[in-house]
Length: 193
Image (cartoon, rainbow, N blue to C red):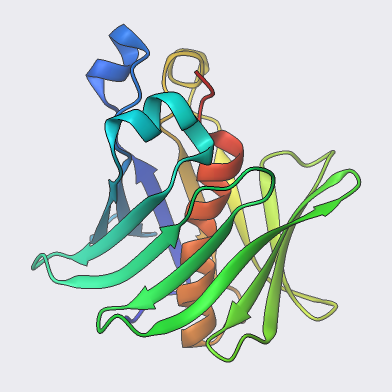
């Protein structure tokens, strides 16, 4: 999966959610920063999990290209406190993991490669609620930023827009950063029923 240095991820608005507050499957379009749609992502989960377990539900996010070929699978099992995500390539080979971690006054993910070594860290300070910086060791290597969508959209939907800057990330790290952007949305910005 080849990714540019900058992406925009837009979650699709579901009319059913607006009028009923009934949680539907998440769907996202992934764009190049110039506006060309590159990929599409959709959630596989069951109705009970979405509306009873909410953010704690098990799910899969499938990312497909414009020819509807699977490119990436992001899987999360049921969790109680901290979520773990496993990322697979189109051949169902594990390429990494994202593990949510506790830290006072920060939101934090450790990002692992296929060999289970930590390669990146994604964190947000309490004071920068919508900005998640990606670090390789002590150096900032990229960022994930949620864009304000306006009062109505923020109040009545959980359809978000994220700008992902891949900075100095390698091709493999870019794929992990893309998966992390989805983890950020699912963990911190999905509406609680």
